[in-house]
Length: 244
Image 1 (tube, rainbow, N blue to C red):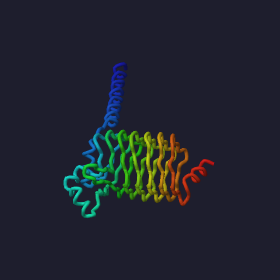
Image 2 (image 1 turned 45 degrees about the horizontal axis):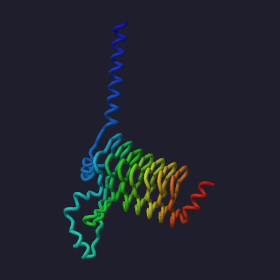
Image 3 (image 1 turned 60 degrees about the vertical axis):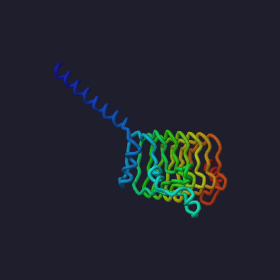
Image 4 (image 1 turned 135 degrees about the vertical axis):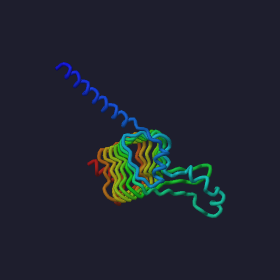
C-alpha cells in the first residue's frame, strides 16, 4: 500500500509540474513585432494571448515605404500630399499582452517630412494589454468594433484626429501620461467607464454621437473640453449631469 501511495504521489507531483511549466511557457511567450507585421502583410488575421511583443510594432510600415518615396522637394513643389496611408484589412486581437516597444499607427518623419498612418478596416482589440512605450494612433480610422478596455498606457499616447465608425471601449483603462483625444470622432458611442487618467486629458473639439459612458472615470489633473460636442451638448453639461 505504501509503494502504491508513493507512486500516486509521484504521478500527482509530475502532473502538477507539467501544468506549472505549461503555464509558465504561456505566460512567458515572446513574439517579435516584425513577425506579426509579416503575417499582417500576408493577409493573416492576428490573434495573440498572454504574449510579450518585442521590438517596435510599426503598423505604418514606414521603414519599408520610405526608400521608394520621392524626396521632399518633388512632392512639395508639385502640391502633392506628404501623407502615406496603410490600410490594414486583417482583424487584430491582443489579449493580456505586453508591448515592450512602441506601438505605432502614426509616424511623422522629420527628415523626409512624410507622415505615415495606419487605418483599420476590421475589428481591433487590445484588451488588458500593457503598453510600456509610446502608443500612437493619431489620424487612424477604425471602421469596425474597437476595444482598448482594461489596458494600461505607461508612456505617451494619442488618438488625436482618430475616427471611430463603430462602438469603442476604453473601460477600466489607465493612462499614466497625458492622453489626447483632440478632434477625435466617435460615431457610435464610446465607453470610458472606470477609466483612470493620471495626468491631463484633452477632449478639445472631440465629437461623440451615441452613448458616452464616463461613469467612474477619474482624471487626476486638467480636462480640456473646449468645443467638445456630446450628442450636441457641451462636455461640462454632460459631465455635471452624470455626476448629479
